[in-house]
Image 1: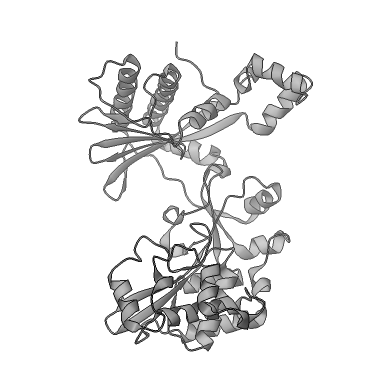
Image 2 (image 1 turned 60 degrees about the vertical axis):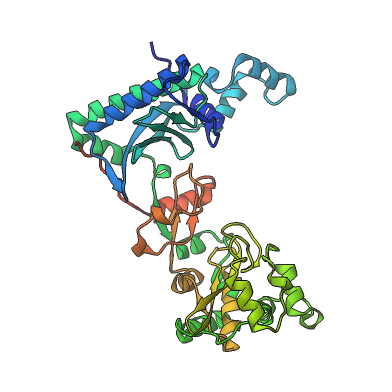
Length: 427
C-alpha cells in the first residue's frame, strides 16, 4: 500500500531536497533505492506520453496539478516535537497546536504544480518551483537526489500515483477536466496583473512613486525622455569623464551633503559596487588609457558600471559601450525601490546635455505615473526575474507576491486581472 503524504510532510521533503546537489547516479550502480527512483522517473515519463506537451523553445513541457490534504496533527509535528513545545511553553495543549497548524495551513486542500521538461535527452522533474531532479533518458544517470532515502522513494511513488489518476481523469473527458481546474485552482496559484494606481489608491501605506519624485520632476523626466537621442554618442571617453557623469547622478539625489567636499572619483569609490576591475586606477584624463583598459576586457566579469551598489535587481548601472563612432552611455535602474533615483539621474544627465540611453524608459515613466501593471506571481514564487512569465506586450517589469498580506490580498482579488490557465490536451 502506497504511503499517503500530507501537506506538512511534502513541505518537509521540499525543504530537505530543494537546491541540494547530491551528485550523479548511474543505473549500473547497485543501490536498490537509486534503481527504484530511476524506474519511477522513467515510468512517469512514459505515462505522460498520452498528454500533449507544450513547447518552450526546443523543450517539451508537461504540467499537471495534483492535490494534498492538510492532514492530522501527526502530519504537522510528531509526539516528541509536541512534548518539546509543551515543555518550552510554546503551546499549552492540543487545542493551541491545532490553531497553530491551521495558521500554517489555513486551507484543507493544497494544490501542487508538477512539471516535466525534456531538453534533448535530459528529463527534468519539477515539483513546485523548488524541487528539481534530472534523468538522462539514454544513460539512466540521475542527479539532484539522495540515493539512499526510502522516504524519497515513497514520496515519488505518491506523486506517480496522483499523476496517473489525473491523466486517467483527463483522458475520460478532457474538457470537463480543464473546466474543473479553471474553476477550482486557487488564485494564489495563478499569474495575474494589477494597475499600480489601484494599489496606490486602496492601500495608503504603499509609497506613491509620483509623490516621492514630485510633480515638477515627473514633468522634467517626461521632457528628458522626449529629448533622448538613442543614437547619440560621446566622441571620446576617459575615466574622469565617466566619474563626472557618475557625480551628476549622485548629486541629483543628494547622496553627499556637501557636493564640493568630495571629488567625482572619491564619490564613485564610496557609492559604487567596489569591483571596478581596475577602472579606479587608470590615468583619469587619458583617452588611450581608458580605451586600452576597455579593449583589454578586464571590465568583463567585474562591476565597474554598478555606480550605486545593491542586490542583483536593486542596483543602478551607468554602462559604457564602444560604438563605431564613439562611446554610448546606458543608464539602468528599473527596480521599484530605485526608480525615483534613476529618474533624477535621467533629468540631471539630460539637463547637462550628456548623450545617454535610459533602459526601459517608457516602462519607468508608466511606473512613476502608476499607469503600469504589476505582475502578480503565485504564493510560492519569489517576485524577481519573472519577465518570461508574462506576455511581452504587457511590458511588465515589476512583480509582487501579495499572498502574505491580507490588506493587499483583498485589493488584488477585487481589482486584478488573471491570465488564462494553460489547458491540458490529449496527444
